[in-house]
Length: 196
Image (tube, rainbow, N blue to C red; front, side):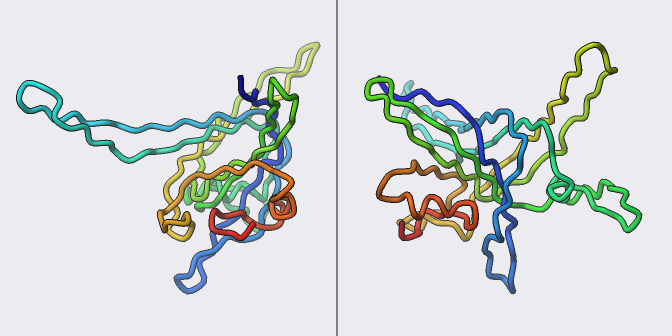
């Protein structure tokens, strides 16, 4: 049958740090208040015709996007959404959005065995959109606003797989064999070429 996927937790981000042209990730920061995530992949295919038939199909580049919905976004994360805190405490929209890495965990359950697992999803090089702000008047029941942030991912030039290919997205499922390495995701960005 397969696994059902449920749950969203441990959403976090890590800055991309440039030290004299050498890129790396800063320390990850976990954000509370994640409600949901939705990842999409787009890839255009071009059909080349000859002799009254499809002669060749050329696959375009894959583009990945992620939509994350939050109940709350910290002020510290606002610089990745294009804001700057001024000395007066006022946040101003600079339009300059820092590229960074985002990650989150999902849980899975095997329908046949009942085994539960956790999977960590990484988008290594993203730019975030500013969330839409909606609010309504207070009535008998208070409804918390949802803040939706869209991320566009591109390949990272300093994260590669074992074959040297640039990576924009990766995922890893926690197992007994990799648990010690996997559990460090709160202090380090896990990469495909790490020695688990």
